[in-house]
Length: 418
Image (cartoon, rainbow, N blue to C red; front, side):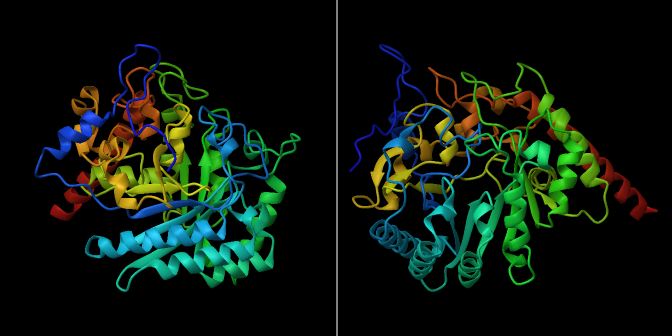
């Protein structure tokens, strides 16, 4: 087993322990009403390297540099062991897991090649017991999609594809470049054109966009909407209170100011050309529904990551926090997935509002915001029991969307009363 402390990271000699600690687990487990939930989403890293060099990448450019000591790619022996652990977990919790998601990630997931994608997809699908539906997805920069063999493999296994693209040529190539400095836009669009052929078009699930406030928000949105994916996901840049995100200013709202015009354009278009996950989730929560993504709402965290060496880890975005942040000390060769349910980093995200800071608990938009993305809450010395570093942005965006949606609901109700 990989010997990594399961909690209690100290900020320095003599420093206090950072939250969440093992004491949280003891406290929560003493509550006979609470029980840990099984995992329903598994991120499996097929390859640990990438063919471009995005300057904002949490994998290679941020605090955790553990990728340097990991195997370049997932071996078939590791795939087989992941499949065994999946089968065990899904079988043990079949009644609670009618559907699970396995996401193939990297680095660049497609670097492993079509044959290995085929092997992994076959093994993982076979791990699902009768009565449990398994969705397979893959996140890619799209450059290697211009390959009929790869596309046929994805089609064979019904692998839904999420493509990273930051907008048009200028916006995308601001950060998403090759190591030699050349922009990736042309190759990405070439791969997207291949994927959008009629035979494969249904595989395109999502376009992922990193927000840079120097890019024109409406131009970026229109470019992404024109791709024709069912959904677009805007991601706030990674960072935290100790290492602020690029473009962030204390108490500023530059990111809300960027997103609000996009919301107004999207919301005011009938029919909407695509789903925007962030907006859809906020609207759903305003109307009493549920969020489908990590960064909004008070949902139950049920995601694990398996790295190329078989290590069982927390979500990758924690790499932006500190060295070793995603590590649990567990691996698929020695541990089952259930063992991770008692990890402080899992427990902290399965206890609802108890896992939020006092500031968040007293906030009027708490149930919609949910504290924001977990990685954005980190502060060296105290850990993750803080509001999001994007607190001001999230509040402004949520209030704007809430007020507009509720005004429309009220207006609609008034017309029906006439």
